[in-house]
Length: 353
Image (cartoon, rainbow, N blue to C red; front, side, top):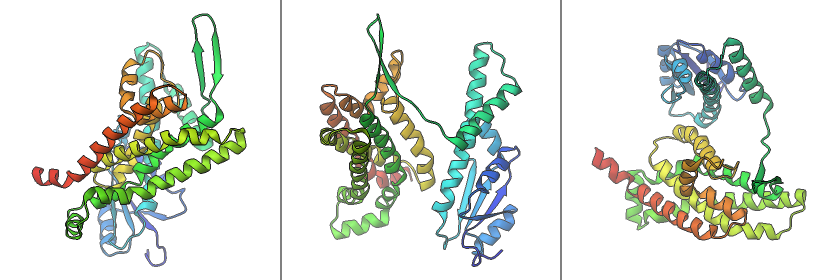
């Protein structure tokens, strides 16, 4: 095995006592961007120290056990050589593979619990059928159709969401995923060495935050403009819709910037961001009503959604009065909180030390 002949060589060390570790290896083997070889821990780490490998992935002995219990933290270890340029290339399919297995196991686990509470039998045949359905879902994908149902107690009128509004809502949901997954710059600006150089150059911390956040925010804004124009062509919506929603989109993006600063300030590496980004994106999209409307009985979830920027954007898009001032208040709170936490991150470390 020669690193020079294959620039993306990955060693897999499986210490898992269950079957899910083999499923993960099988999933990773489908990726053509790198080659894999099963090795022992000692052999893999020795080759890594000799710079003959790019990455060593160690599947912990409790990998299957944790996923089957609905947990995914601390199930893997990933080591890279100092000269490696491939962590991002490896991390993405690795995280995807783990999340797919975890979601399958948590789905089966929750189904068993729910049916058990309802005194409904759930046998191995049902479980195999459910797992096959999940597998088909990963392979073929699925489409969510969203409808708004309004009832006055006498009759029900089903009103389909405007295609343009639906497009914008989906785009803004993915904006959160992009800003969090791209938040590695927060790790850099909170480093003590960089702060010393900034202090010597007379640069404030908030200025560094402004400079570094400008690029991802501009990308999101350009994405909104491009997706809006495409949606106009496909749905015959007027250009006025783009300009009407633009102020709310800007406020929403700055809201997300504050959440990004808070999130990244409490994490330590990019892998943590990759795990947390889809979770936060899902929570914001569902609880805020951007992806689907919460049922009337979900009072607690609706109260939680007051802290989410997506709620106020959703209300603004749906032409609800008073949404914009509330969105501004939410934005100011998240931005101030994010800047404060990121500025004081190094101070917290010194206190804890």
